[in-house]
Length: 255
Image (tube, rainbow, N blue to C red):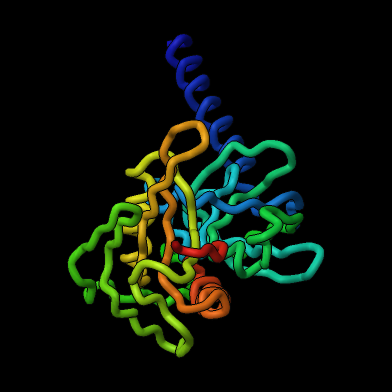
């Protein structure tokens, strides 16, 4: 009988200690300070530690211990800009990093170019859905059949996809002129995934440009093309791709 009592007390003690540990882990945070960084593009479409799919256009984040669904307000310390994010991933961070945020969130905080910034994180609530992002989903249904050249693989029609609120120059889907390089990959499959992701976001004229490297290898560059002038390409990047959290890139000449 005494042994049974001891066993029951041990079980109750273990449950109590676990409850304390959980309470410590999930203590609401009111002013956690540290560095925020954002996910690299290749995480797009991958499954998070909490079983959700990462989308760069969603206002989400990864935190070290806050549970899935927690809403946090992330404020950049040097300029006061803030954004509310939903935790849907868990990370083990180092070197002062306390939170990993989506590309859309990084755009809201204006840290795309810097890559990171010091922030304050405050827990504000809970939600089963992500906060509303400024990104507007677009249909990718009006694409023509694929076309090819010795240097480019073009997937997507020549006709640009109309975007609400944008009336500037758009890619033609043709070869030559100027383009926007959005990424470079040593593996073709990675470039293809990026291309398909852009097409699904409603971007037209997405090309894969294959080049030989100085070492004799191959490099696959994802490019949007083409534009009649460098100014047109810069306008499309500045007024369409960046504000809608689709991509950042550099202007290149497509010979």
